[in-house]
Image 1 (cartoon, one colour):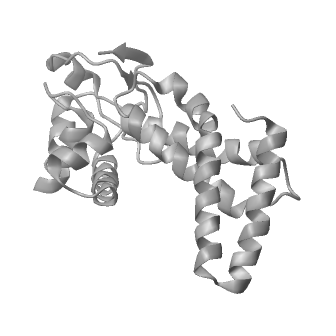
Image 2 (cartoon, one colour; image 1 turned 120 degrees about the horizontal axis):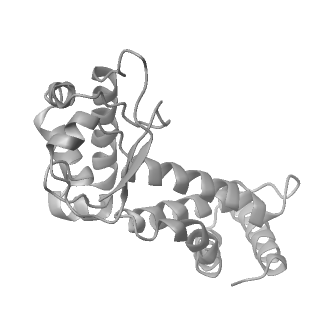
Length: 221
């Protein structure tokens, strides 16, 4: 892995080159910026891999790596050397995005009644049953399965298709966004947009139990 000092020097070279390119608007200078960004991504890829490593058994692990790389590139483009060393700056972007995406893709709140009445399919990622709700389109599930089924019926045909593909409801196994793109022949942005809108509808149509409690328990499928 590239050292912190080497990374700092490389990023400073990128900043200097970008200033020149922004001034000249020359295609060759812009291409040099793009090439150097690519070099930075290759040399600093361990920043992403290290943050995603604990999710390596999750079905959406390839998506986490891709999203981590996107955040690494974003941190390269808006880095301010006056505020912090680059490694710290980049790690904040990468860590936040990967942890949120891991939760969004692999942690789903499930009603206890629904869990009891449906035979779980075997899969490596954890299915969480806990109280409260997580941020970023996490779903609150009620204890009886009828509540979930009614909420699920609120989705349109395409939203149901995407949710089933990604989360593997019923007897089907979930898949990563990348695999869903290939199978369903939709763009990544379209699948993410439909997924988020579907999760929002489900969340709005599901409620906590009367006492506001859910069972704190982690089930590994």
